[in-house]
Length: 357
Image (cartoon, rainbow, N blue to C red):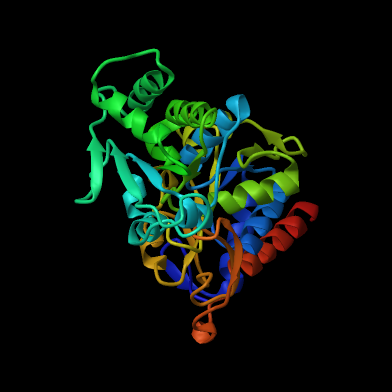
């Protein structure tokens, strides 16, 4: 196992001992990132509970934009397979969905199932770059959330005229099976709420759905599910009082560090995820994929290289194309780095021993 403590290479036992000691000495640690396989995410929650830490994720901005809207207004969603197989009208909101493999699959062929089978698929873009086959509509100066609000007003008949959004609204209502692709971190909570409202209103006369295709780093969709069945809460929870408490504002890791509330951190990044700026401002442990430990060495005082799920380690990950948790076998199991779940478990065991001593 490759490991460093304060910039010096060391062995696994020393690094794990130092990590446990750091967490044992802290009063309000944070466990963040959670860009890893399901077993490692579960181990991170167990470690957070043992340490009295709070939990946050790498893609929390998009996650809470979606969860905030969902809690107030609900959602009408579909799956990537349904969008590829059935959609005859696809609205691409913003720039981020153009980087998604789901949109690439949609653009490659027309609908093959359902009422729209054999129809020509229309690609419509709101505020994004589009392509030669796309009808593109410019975003309003106020941004995508404002643009979606304007489009919703035209679609509902609250605004009228020969404006571009009036034409776009007509095209959406003409769909037999329509899908709107969006990235919640790009359009924000209000944008998600406007889009979901638009989708529900179009469904009064035809079939239309929303599909989030976030390209944010991390495994937030896996974390949301694991957090729900582990704590009954969404991901941002704190264990400081011995039970999981959910508070999206209070347990925002960046806010906690900026306010001086956190005094130690553990960053879990077995899968590639940019290290946050705040990580270097307090004593920190970083568990990172074996291909990038040097990048973390200048930021965290304890760095441990772990296997990369789906590359050098087996793991269950969120599969964006299937919209489901999927097992991925290691492509090169001989690489040698331990799993993040194993390292986190060993840190937790040593932490428990130190606290009981």
